[in-house]
Picture 1 (cartoon, rainbow, N blue to C red):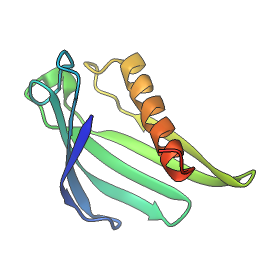
Picture 2 (picture 1 turned 120 degrees about the vertical axis):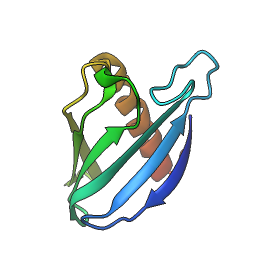
Picture 3 (picture 1 turned 45 degrees about the vertical axis):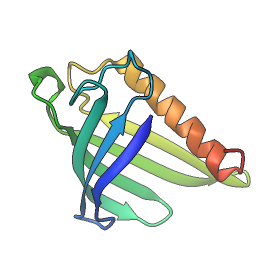
Picture 4 (picture 1 turned 90 degrees about the vertical axis):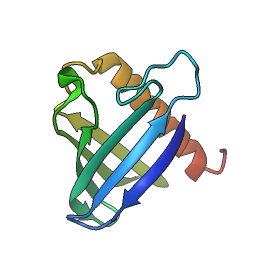
Length: 118
């Protein structure tokens, strides 16, 4: 998957717009054939502790519309950082299982990056 950041204002109240494009030719996007585009805003930012954002997919499909709240909490943990992500308000057209897989893959890549193995 590749990511394109169209806009990003990384402050409380700031907004962003991002497109994620699948590399696999058979993967289906929610905005276009192979892309998911979403926009959102930062509701709360506490440095080194908490990120709360509200996101919304850009799509014509009513089953994929609606605001989602993502809360990411960071805590010190045994020489590192524990990250807990909670995704609330998932639209009915988004598979909970697929969303879980996406989060697990993303967090594994983040761990590899910050641990120097990427």
